[in-house]
Length: 147
Ligand SMILES: Nc1ncnc2c1ncn2[C@@H]1O[C@H](COP(=O)(O)OP(=O)(O)OP(=O)(O)O)[C@@H](O)[C@H]1O
Image (cartoon, rainbow, N blue to C red; front, side, top):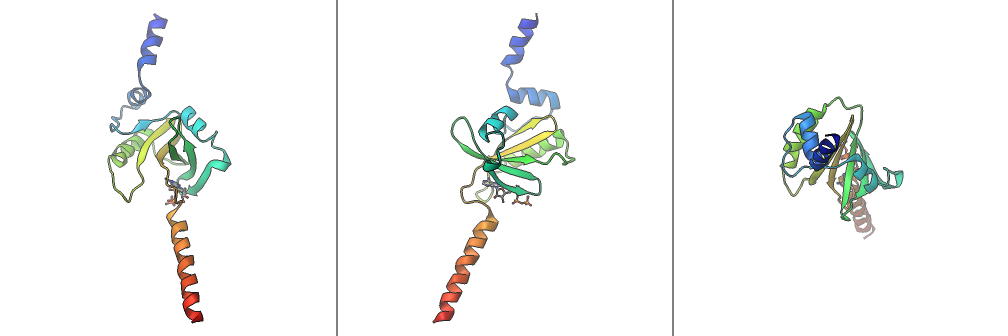
């Protein structure tokens, strides 16, 4: 009997398990990652893989098993948002596709820990891009002033 139950449990996908536990229907294109998968992808969230820090937590560069690079945002555990609200919000966000928005691939909920998995953007933050542009403009102005 126990063996039979174990086999049935193994047949369920992770997304089914998460959805059954929390009772939130997830949108079709939200992938549920396990924390083990994301730990492996980021080499246990090592500091060398840290891309930056935002108001909601740290962002790490990860490499998935299929070789795809992703940006993994580890939400601060201080967040008061519950798992149900988090998954509802996620379903809405993941259904939006726009060329100015970073594509959200999926999430991971492990106990109180919540993570978001995004497309990795090579060119770093908007702030750095703007800062780079600002530097180039100031060099250009200085060159003009010398004439
Ligand atoms: N998809 C991504 N690809 C590459 N780097 C990223 C990606 N998302 C975030 N980062 C890096 O992580 C940093 C923090 O990002 P995050 O989205 O958490 O905060 P933010 O947008 O910079 O600030 P805030 O949360 O205050 O709005 C960014 O500045 C950027 O350097």
